[in-house]
Image 1 (cartoon, rainbow, N blue to C red):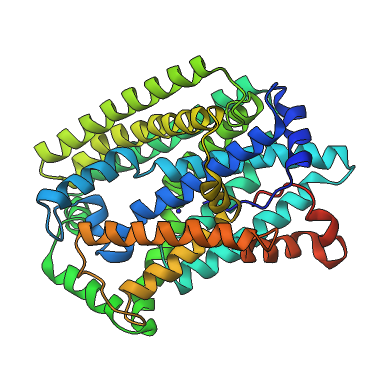
Image 2: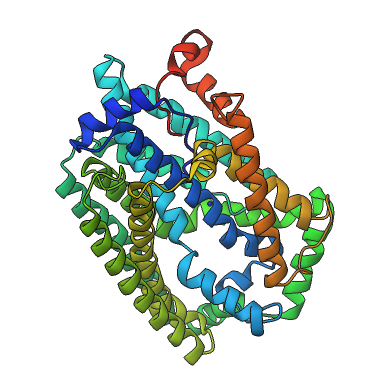
Length: 427
């Protein structure tokens, strides 16, 4: 799920990004490209997250664990896995890194302590993320984005080349740490390994229990949501998410300063980037999927090999998506509705949770576990259409999305809120 960013003033943002990236493209194109990329990110994430909203959690790791896995359902799962899963949260992390660089540049020009404003932004995101995770949906990504954003701010003045190196190293540390811990478990007492494998082995009794909890009332849901959210924000964060997201943010900081995220590079460079990203990424993901099917989704093999192939493939495909969006922006495609979604990314991210939990959880329609992948995708299309129309309509009357307005008020305070609304704010 994500760096919610955003309402923005084109002229102020153009000056900031021009000073930081040194690119020659028009400022309005740059800001549009960032908004479009955010819009693509927030819309694309729903295609992935819908699985967690609608199905037992184990079905995300092992698609054979639950639900019909034939025909259209199989093809939709495959397309989501290869082109979406892990790609759009990667883009969001990169964009939050880019926003850190932009904010540091603005603060320097205005003699404002950049760290103070940034930490307020991250604190606001952290609080929103905690409320989101424990009250609505355990799959929240605002908490890890806020915590990682607070750390990588220290590197905002580092050169692009070093940022790319640091980002790659941080991303790799997550892989090394995960493999080492899993290998250590495999070499330890067999009873511990068997217990760990049993946790990731599909069992009908576990599926039924999770379905019953989410089809129940809010109190019933909390018994599953709280421990799941806690695990994501502690063990999973320390061993994987911190390193992976921090690395992506550092890469995003470098790409912005190099003009890549502002559609300022040549079309040839974006074509090469897209070909390498989609080509190399799809190859790695395909190898990981082949291994999963060959081993019948064995948990140990999945973590030690298949998952790593797909995670690195996700990074490459995410860069392919970035290149494609930049090319479309350079060619003058009319993507205003997508940019509108991007300007209200934080609002739209949380709105997706509100809509989907109402559809699938017991406090709403209670359809958890009852809608196959084809039906889930139909819901995704409906939410996409609503958000594209609603975001455009909202921004026709207001400069900010409602959640963005609240965050801006918290960060700048009532006395400075009016002046702050005239500059770019990426949260």
